[in-house]
Length: 136
Image (tube, rainbow, N blue to C red):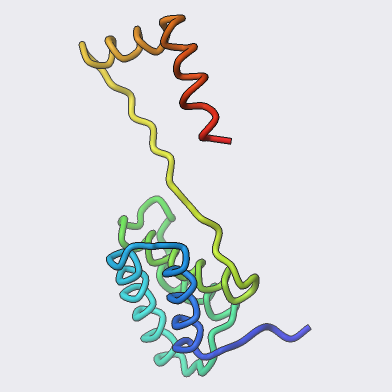
């Protein structure tokens, strides 16, 4: 089976239109564009005319080099995510909405107050009736 291929310019234009339909912010779309410029440089340096999943994978391996993923800085990890968005859109025509879930443990008086509120039976009932349905 032949791998899907398209010029990077055409693909990124299509992805930008798609992200705009999903109401991605202007600043986030610009972050994607900035990351895609790194891919464009890689493709020029490696004489690649079309973006494919294989090109995306090669770019990511090039970016990581011999380092562990955890050793990458935040921007490099974001570039990888932006490359993966291109490949996902190329292969599926969609991009799954992603929201990172970061949980922070609060220590001290504020944390204890919040925990006692959450553990309170009345608060539990309120949270269950008003908050949980929105996470389905």
